[in-house]
Image (tube, rainbow, N blue to C red; front, top):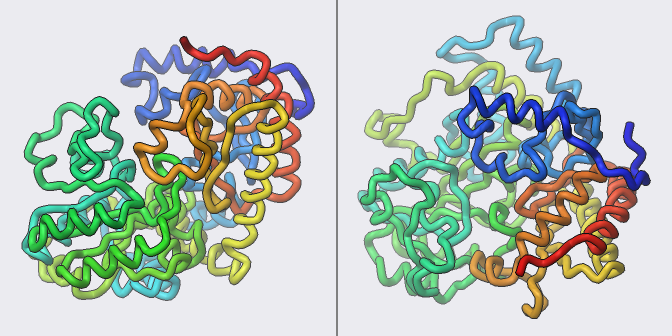
Length: 454
């Protein structure tokens, strides 16, 4: 095990060799484009336990990336492993029904007040497509309103207006509807209205402008994928009010927030009642599993076959076994969840800010604690919370954060490349203390070595 107080940074020779080997058989050397962002090289891992992760070079990390938020329960929890192994001995795939799918659906009904009915898929990207299809069929309308910076999967519809480049932003009142990928049918963009996050007045204007045309408003209850920005006061109730007034389907994308913010998700945490909810990541605890849940009337066209919802691997028994264990684990937390992980996250945020201040680094952690973002302020920008995608682009120094993130990685603290940190149920107070101990030489190295790009 590496000594957390060692000043010798980790090395990654085996990961480098494996990545080079992978480029000859795997397109780009990775199976998700975002993984190429990791510096100094996309890492290869061999094992994990609880809050810890070990790579092929033998480096041990206190992991706050935690499977991009999917591993709410830590790495390789014994109960989940046993549940999957037990099911594997009975059958891996039937393309048919099992009692497990009823068990999981009934748990979701008990946990989430708006989950009157459920349908399963294998990824949240699939569920986004299903939710938008249902909303359009239910309303007979084609337009969908979404917010800048919110991520709704990598499909054709999920990325329209997600992260527009600054030179093509458009105005605050009428943001551009740009898709970051080639190969998209141009007409897809025409079916979206994009609005800045945390601007209730512009939201009201957009809904009024497109009155009678909007099928859905889709949103992350907390903007987690681009920074970590909680909704301003009154925003979520306003979305509900506008949807009720104009017959619009309210879709909460709780891929990240679901179960992390409590058994009822962020909708329970903030007291909102969406019509449809997208669940992913923590619902399977790391296996490929996702669900669409919501009010019964919105499933009628799926029930009668007017809306197609299908998938050979939907309701896969291995994934259901993992999900049943995951949901039971959340239920067992009772009232202490999410308070316990929130307290740990707030302690980590406070410690990181103290280290930043000690070394004169403009790092400003923000978020509700159980998930947070480390904003690295550009020289001369204003202090205060970052509240929107454009605000983040203007004020966050991504290059400087990337350097500090690498220093942290080389000292055994792993955060997400874009600055996001997750706390899992496996993290302990001693993990937070050790992470801050490991971070100290990383902050010192960054303060000593970082050179701004001219």
